[in-house]
Image (cartoon, rainbow, N blue to C red; front, side, top):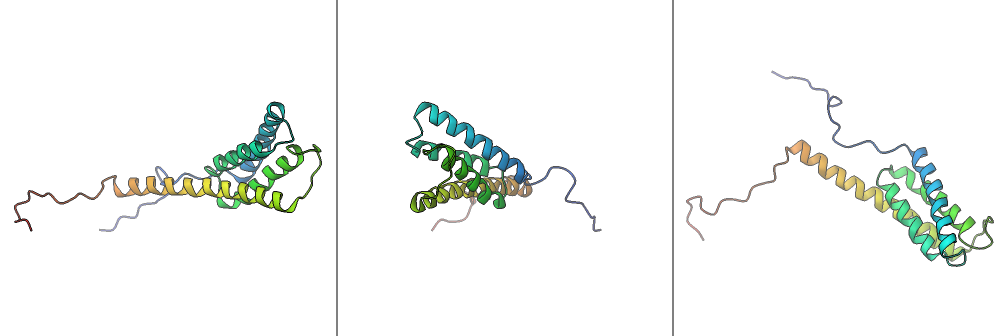
Length: 147
């Protein structure tokens, strides 16, 4: 007898990512806070540590976001870095090599966070679906003669 079971009932095998607007708002607000703290502690003339901190923020946000949120997250973080971590504060500028590197770092960090989260979630879902049992190695004392 065939019994139809809905896959939508019960626990979801893979959690839903956070909505993209929420991720973007958190990226913008978090980057502003990190850059403000950086400017207070280090100053606005040395943006290297701000880039590291904001890249870590992008990676952490990538852990709970969709892949489609990564470019927007990178751009919002870059806007904050460009506008407030380098003098003159509040002015957006484009310095080709530097800003291209920053955007690449930020987008890569967001994508790495998202890929890592998807791998961990897929592995956990596989364990739930497969029953959590790993394949067993054959018993060496099963009575068969050795080679």
